[in-house]
Length: 327
Image (cartoon, rainbow, N blue to C red):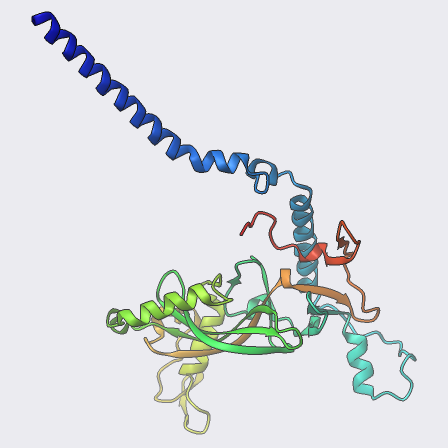
């Protein structure tokens, strides 16, 4: 009887061990199933995407575009008008001739080729209010005037939560494709107002972020130099209401207090709720194409992407945004 009971105990223990082993094996297979599917899926080989020809071509185009825009920014204000008058437009207005000679390069929409801005419309780096990065374009070019259509306005807060921006999406005037954003104004957020923000606003902002074309917009803090200049312009009294009083060695405006140095005007000197006007447009360089102002041809040579079946032109190499996305 004791032997039978011992054999039954051994059988029960063995069955339990087999069940535990089967359970662990099922969990292991279930855990590794996505990896196995991904490894067997020929459409998204992560290991081969790094060495893919299209991926390398995209990186080459990004580097060429980055160097091109850096050269364009450095040569914005060094371009001089040729002294020799062109005779290609007899009878044209002198303003048109000067503008044509001065416009060496133009930025156009990469989708339809519409002229958006000229090289002289680019804002100098020291006059830019902030840095903007887009989802598909890490680098942007800042212009003060461009031929775009402004869309709906939304509010964006930077990572620090101190500054709030009024931003509008901008699209091409012809093909309506998304090109970037226009920063309308900057406002220092009020701490008490942020604490009193309702959950509905948070849900609205979340849906706005998910459904918006500009959902990948990342805004930096305002540049210190621009912020000091803007704060000084806001705090400066109006000229007719600022009587000049005499002081030993210098003239002092207002109530006789010496002017505050610009170095002391930082973000702490701006009261919460103060809105500073920006009105600067930031276009993603990966959405643009740089043309020669006279030949109307791309500065960087582009290679057409053809359909393998009918040889129709589908796109061009400078329009590659990503080679790893799969839907």
